[in-house]
Length: 380
Image (cartoon, rainbow, N blue to C red):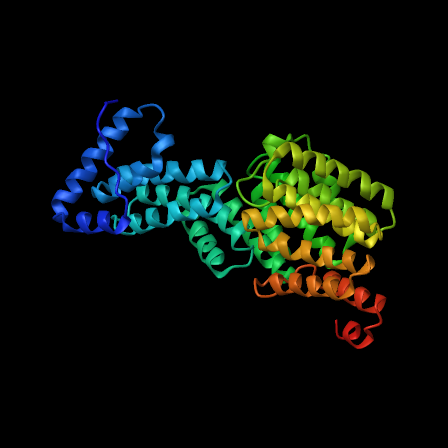
């Protein structure tokens, strides 16, 4: 809102030396003045400079305003798909909250921020990371304390995903039953989420009858893409079609599997969230590999790999590398292909991602058989 001269430091260390020479009280006062001036200049559109505002109010020791702008900056980063920036904004917010007296307002603020935090952690740190488990436990505790049923439902959904992806399907099934009961207190989109997760667990356990019933119930619900959207994980309207496609393929309905996977991909493209699209691409590419449609499987897996590396999704990166490697073996690049499969398994294993491991080891065994590496294949 003003016209003024501007100075720029050519060397950052010079700026740091001068900054550090300011007495702490003077430094805080200047931060507060600059923050207040920026806030006035950008009235009505502070999101554009929310990161700067947060930094100035942190420096000015105005924790309340710093928290508001850290949350605003995190939301803006999430919409830009800058997931690492979301984490960078929320961690100092939690540190400030720890210094505040225990109160209902502090609990509400923390719960709201934790829900955003676990959303990003589940995608970038993997569904199985210890830090995610700790944050989900804290989110559950806050949800119970505040009697926030939607927050409790979301935490249970994440815990179901966590246990499923570590391969603990028995525990995931138990949480799924609890999830189904809580979903009855909410709306159709929660019921859809419950059907998707419980049907997915049943499918991975090999209970195709239960999977057909649960996935079918979810598919029959009149829920739009927007209504189905959840802050964390995959949009269930897309995910339930991905799993139904795998179920159909397992029961011999190849044409039906392709048709519903095309539906899932179309919805995922419309949805626009990278994590959801990567899931739909991975499931379809997996089925195409099982069908030995090598060229199309390779094309979809290459697209998944590019997205996974751009956004930092270990689950989809590992899965895509396995598929690409199997395709390369069929295309005559045996050494490179088997190397890619093992690289993919090397991404999944350290991240604790065990779900679907027998299927992926089967692809490694098939690749070894294709090129005559019998002992290596038997080990897989």
